[in-house]
Amino acid sequence: MNAPLRLTNLCKQYGGTLVVDGLDLELEAGRCHGLLGPNGAGKTTTLRLALGLIGADAGTVELLGHPMPADAALARRKVGVVPQVDSLDPDFTVRENLHTYGRYFGMKGAEIEARIPDLLDFSGLNGKADAPILTLSGGMKRRLTLARALVNDPDLVFLDEPTTGLDPQARHLIWQGLRRLIARGKTLLLTTHFMDEAERLCDVISVIDHGRVIVRGSPRELIASNIEPHVVEIYGDGLAEWKACASDFCRRCEQAGETLFCYTEAPERVVAELATRPGLRYLHRPANLEDVFLKLTGRDLRD
Ligand code: ADP
Image 1 (cartoon, rainbow, N blue to C red):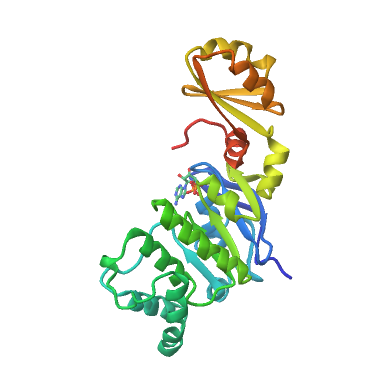
Image 2 (tube, rainbow, N blue to C red; image 1 turned 90 degrees about the horizontal axis):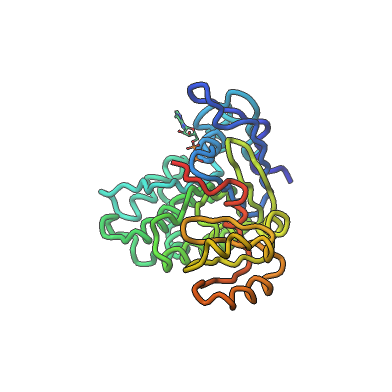
């Protein structure tokens, strides 16, 4: 099957700076793909190029088999978009918002109406069809934005930080919805700053920085091939003394604020040594995607 999205040697510059710099990305159908990167890495610009909202300076975009941006209108008929910021019409009800959106795709009123029960059920908004948007909670609005992106029964759904600003309960509901979409064979492209979200949902992750893909793989592959398997986070009195001799016990250490992160294959040695230092406290855990992300893109703040 053709890749739902293929970006080849894509370049885009703003004001003389290459913000997308020879980026290659190919999605596999029916999979959830994550696009991770620090602020300013070029994620949003890449999504906008992929959707044909802006043109590239070099390289090619093929969306659902269509060259972009030339065939943007045609390709986008089978694409759903969940934007970072909700753009629901506050003066309309849930049903009216779904109708307005469906009409963008040239759908008839009856066709949209027939899809509404399934969309409301999918998003856990049963009984809310006639509720004004102003009466919905933040979580409900996000779920409606997701339902709205599905009104045209897309094959590929772009999700730009779909759970930012939501509480844990609301995030779990969104994740449940996204898993159902994957089970239905949809292809997802997700940007997120939550590494746990990417680790839970994504089959394949591409980490981008400075406008290029720097690594690609499943969450498990990325962890296995980029980082030591165990982390001991250490803090408390005597950290400086411990740090001075840490290289005797662990392979690599990084300090962030008051905490020292010790990366190691053999956590027993670190933990045994820590037991002799009562002023220090520690947390021993398996390495995760956030550790990989910070190793590859650094701990410095990007504004
Ligand atoms: P991300 O989504 O990874 O945070 P963006 O793609 O939004 O990154 O931005 C990448 C860089 O391109 C940033 O430095 C941003 O300021 C710049 N940029 C994005 N869009 C524009 C624009 N329309 N005009 C000028 N600079 C832009």
